[in-house]
Length: 432
Image 1 (cartoon, rainbow, N blue to C red):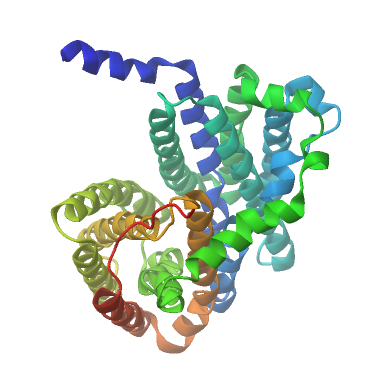
Image 2: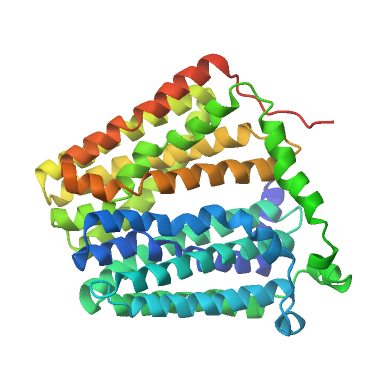
């Protein structure tokens, strides 16, 4: 038995698995550059909160990437594809563009030209989202049945480590050397992905497919559209109360998302330094999130799906009141740590359970497509709906705003009550 465990662990010594972890790191680096990091920079530049709130819309490319994924997935780049292969050529090109866009964003002056900042932030987000498309394909094609799970796990850990490192280091660097230097260092982190791609061979399945001709020219896009989009939607719409399910998908984490949309400006305006935010929010918050993910998985195993959704939904709602209390107390570092710990644990638990819920909705005949469409719908709505957050803060104040975000969680819980009465949780079997 022991030898079986040791042989199973040997999969992590596969150089491809290490490469996937590093690609996960390179994929996670850009995410916060147009999110909480940019919000903190804009706050220090005295940009109004309404404008900062609207910057959440910059993240739309991450949620709409399925629209252009077929083109990037199938199109071969001239010259580069012959030199590096279809996947590696796209990865290298997008990494180069991403580095350039990050540097150009870092040299911006938000107080003088906010439009330029907006354009470059969208460029970073769009390129990063496109990069994610190819990284996911490259990761899957590198793996076989035996190391697929290990590849997925190491990719997620690489991604999360990148999010922690960029969040922590950018705040500390900006506190001592300024935001331009911070963004230059973040652009340098992307080199990890470039080196990884250069040292990793093109997957054999992609080489074989490329030898058969131009995939884009051979693809029946009307057939693809029917199979990839229309059929999964049509199948999902057969469910009773499918509109209620979609609305619940949008609203379950809405209160949590609304509060998080203005987190960085809140910390800074409350009086915390960038270094304190790096140490508490980014480091402690990351540890708490991992703990919450673990607890969410345990809770789901210990009880039913709907009970787990209820527990996590109530905890997420209650954690927003901690921010309201922090707004009243002021820059107390101990209370900040308590607030971040509780908020990230509850958020991690909610994420784990909610992802499991979305997965349970998918027909096994269309699992990947239905999940992608559900998660995209959730993210699109969440990104759009939280955009007025800054406007609300300016008119209500911080404490009242966080009380409002607590109330904003109630519609999702009301829909959860309805669904728990009407919809049993079961995975739909494959259609004939």
